[in-house]
Length: 150
Image (cartoon, rainbow, N blue to C red; front, side):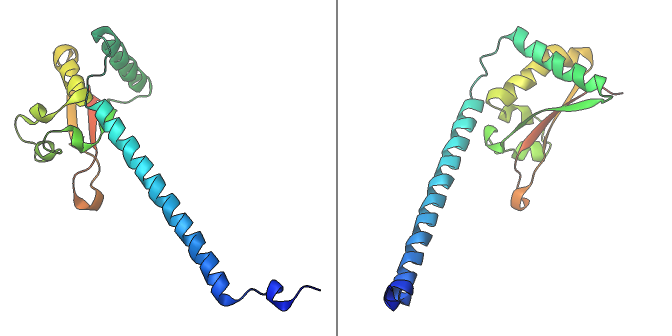
């Protein structure tokens, strides 16, 4: 029969094993958090640059989104959501509804505004950029809505 020490390890040994397990979990958490942060930075980097789509591709995409919304009985549609870091002022001018807020846009959000200016606005569409999330009470993500009701 195995000895009592083999069946019931001493408490110091158990604490040591538990501490090692906790340290492994903490390391894994830190590693995952770093990976998520790197992914987020890469996405923001990609969104801050031009999309690379042609004017025709952008117009077709806008048309598809609008037509789908119309078929569903909507008079407006959220066409894009982006982090406030894609604005040169982190969305402050949008939040304050300041004149000239559109000059703070960069990357794809700026492209969407330009597409609206060139093709949708002359056809009676409206656009709205607004903060749609306030994590911890501060401006977060921004939503872009296109509407066509009266």
